[in-house]
Length: 170
Image (cartoon, rainbow, N blue to C red; front, side, top):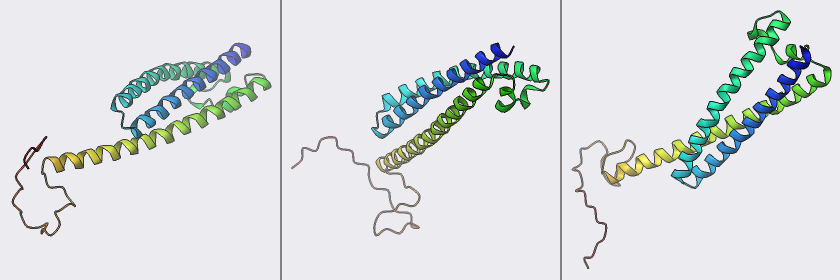
C-alpha cells in the first residue's frame, strides 16, 4: 500500500502546486487589470479565478479521500492525519519530497492570499472613488465633504443640476 499511497501523495501535491501556480498567475493578472482600470480584463480574470477555484474544490475532495485512506492505514480518523503522520507510511525519499512539495504549496497559497488581499484593497479603493464621483455628479451631499465657505450644518439650497456635454455659447 505504501507505494500506491506514495505515488498518489506525490501526484496530488504536484497537482495542487500546479493549480496554485495557475491561480497565482490569475490573481496577479487580475491585479494588473485593476491597476490599469481595465474592467473587461478584471471580469475575465474573475471568471478564470472562479473556474480554477471549482477545480481546486475537486482537488480538496481528492485530498480528503487520500487522508481517509491514510487514516485507515494509520488506524486514526482522517481529521487527525498530518503530513508528518502520512510520511510514516511512505519511503524516506518520498517523505522528503512530500515535505518539500508541501512547503512550496504553502508558500504559493500564502502568496495568493497576500495578492488577493491587495486586489481587494485596490478594488475597494476604486469603488470608493467611483462612489464619490457619482455623488458629485448627482449633486448629493457626502458625509465629510462640504463646499468651501459653506456651513455644513445649515441646509443649503441645492445647486441646480447643469449638464453640458458641449458648450457652444461664447
